[in-house]
Image (cartoon, rainbow, N blue to C red; front, side, top):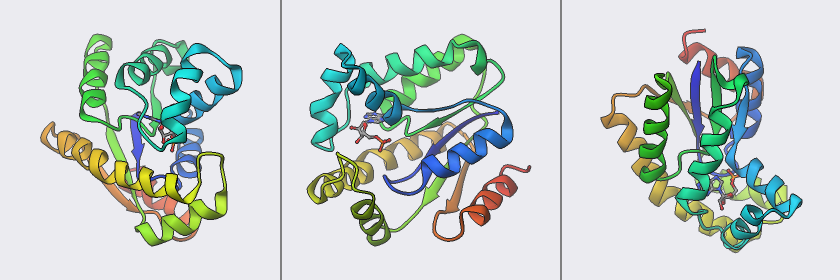
Length: 184
Ligand code: AMP
C-alpha cells in the first residue's frame, strides 16, 4: 500500500504511522525526521532547513521534494510506503503526483488524524522538542491550518480516498480504527 498520514503537529502521526507501517510491512518516511537527521549530520540541506524549522515555518518545497524523490527510488519502497508529514503544500502534492506518475503507481489513501488544537497545545508543550517552544507551536499550528487544508482539498478534488480518523484516545484503538477504515 502507498499511504500518506497527515494531521496537525502532535496528532500522533509518528506513533500511528510507525505502527501502521510495521503492520503492513512497508517503510515509513517522515520528512521531519529526515530533516532533523540532516541537521544532526550538519549537511548543507540540514543547515538550510534549520532556520525554517526553528521558526515553525515550512522548509522550501524543492528541498522537500528532493528528499521524497530520494526515498521513493529505494528498493524497499517498491511495494509500498507510508509518508508522514508530507505533502504539506499543494506544490508538494503536485510534485509528488508527478513522481508517482513516473513510477506508474498510485496513492491508495490518505489517513487524516484529527485532534483539536487545545489538546495539541498541551501535548506539544509536554513533548518539549527543540522546535517546540510555545510561539513555535502556535506558528506551526497556524501554518498547518493554512496549508494542509489546501492539500486535503487538492486530494479530494483528485479523487484520492481521505480517511479521517479521530486521534484522541487509546493508541491501539486509534490504530484499529485506521486499519478498519483501510479495509484491513
Ligand atoms: P514534523 O516533524 O513533521 O512536525 O516537521 C518538523 C518541521 O520540519 C516542520 O515544522 C517544518 O519546518 C519541517 N518539515 C517537515 N516536513 C515538511 C514538509 N513536508 N514541508 C515543509 N516543511 C516540512
